[in-house]
Image (cartoon, rainbow, N blue to C red):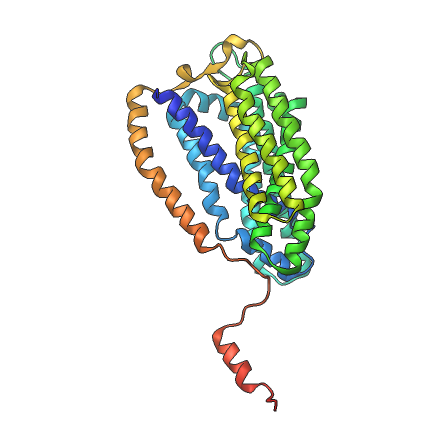
Length: 352
């Protein structure tokens, strides 16, 4: 395989991994104000993603770094043209991270509720903007003959891209419910499953509509044939439909697998529809950035490939081990130290 194509596929893989893992993180954040009823249950939801959310964000950092090194022209045009949108994402990421730490700094109910809402708003905002930004690459943005972005923030907002943002929000929220159904117990788990049943139909309809619309946009705006773009789109629609079926039948493990498949398929459909270009120009199709024109020199890509082939499996194994270690369900009940348990058992009233 040509190294340029390899790195385009690898970047698509990194974005897929990012949305697969951070997708349920964001979904959990969106659900925080609505699903839990007690402070312990809210704490349990925070705890469900506490050990993994920062590791999940590494995928975003690696995707950005890989784009910078493998496709510098793509990186320069996208990150300069999408500057305000990316800055807003950075703000949402920061306040979301802060909410994990600052929520625990006080016991006041209003203080904790405020940071809970900060997390929810940040999670929703990130999902919305990522959907708008990534779909804009395919729908087209103003690029001049020098390969420079010639528009502004408003040019990212079209009917298709805004709908893509909304679809991402619903998909991630649905993905979050299937994740929580695997990580929680008791009444909290029951309410999570109920939320999943409420979100299933809107998420499936929005996701399916987005995937179909993406195929149409690829054909109309990027001079693509229906095949092969339709393949990941059809796989995603089937996955989301099965996820809804499994949610209603209470099969949590399969439901999570299918929402993961739907999330990955959404990214795969975007990148399949985008290739062989990396950014479509809305001013003149001839100004679009393509893979050969945006890529680094062969030697750079060769060195990067060696490093990636060595490091990537190690990262995957480490992150897989992390999820294995923190696989247990969370009850939300208060945990006593062994000393407290012994004291309680020896000082309590005797019977008989």
